[in-house]
Image (tube, rainbow, N blue to C red):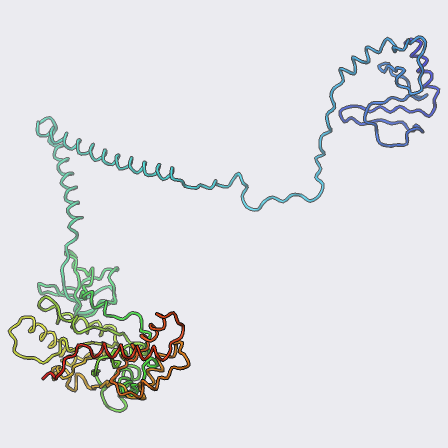
Length: 534
């Protein structure tokens, strides 16, 4: 050590309150002496390496102090202002020092522990697949490949079969192999024919039910058999006298034959009740009372007639001028009762082919009996119920056969049960007397044109929801002696509303009613020839 360095070290040793603080790099722990320099009261360590020497601290051999380490150092004359010879070595050490790296993060967690998401981890979840047009095209392509493979398989089988047949024909194949191939081919073809033809079955009659699984049946040939009933057969349809299907080998019951009803009969059945009720009928109190006594009351309270010791009427006929409310009353009856309602027009019973009309009448009443209690409404009965006369036309004779079947269903040998019949016509005088006699049609209800009281009720009923002007006076139309039916009054109210709507008005005035009345009466009387029909 040269004289300059020695003098500097001696000066530091003479300072008793100077301590050495050595800060090591790379996050190593620091060491401090108990003495603290009075010039530095900051406990925080410096950001760079610093050296301080006390009297008790020996100078390390590997630390070279220069004059730049002391702030109050003056250049020694021997130093020449350039520092000691070891200055180059210090510079080399500074160059070789490693770069600063931040200390590692502490492993301890501060605060609450983060909770894991509920359910399976994201890596364990299956990816969501969204099909695209490309996937569909790939699927279609695989289907086409499958079809081609099936064709290829069938082609290979056919070629193999032809090769064997050719070998047998030429005599190159053994006889046993040829026989086995022919038997397999025949069995395959036989199974295909059986699949297309199905199992043969016989038709028989059910004579007696022994229990749920056995019965006595009779076949078409005559003998009776004690047979079993298959589990898939509907037991509710099995009754004595029913037509059944029998297996051709074991003669067991495999099915029940039911009569196929005409599809038009199912259309006649009213599934949804009409919206019209007795409150929508203006007047007709007497007619409503008679219909309820003859049709509605026997179905709802049959015990009343039993106590009286009388039989309820089987049917009623509604007759009168057109538009007097006959069909409207029938709709109200269908609305009020919970019975099955079947409606048909007389012209629908006229069929093209021979025997179809009577068959339709039978199926109509058979459907009514299966769904009893029921009501059968036949509108325009004069289409088939006219008086019989000698006719040479085949069509007229077929209509008469249809009417005869209707007479038999109304009052024949068999009891019809809870079936009520309502007929409607405009010309009761043209009907056959056998059709409307007591026992078949017990009550005839007349519908006439409304009087003044009934007219007022009908006008009030149809104008209750209309926006009327203050000048509207309906008594003017009520007091007139015009033969207005209920349908005519409804047409007048509707026409008056259309007149106001045509002129872009929201209220109907008196002039609209007058114009509508004239138009309805003109339409009603227009084209009628003078004179009478005899």
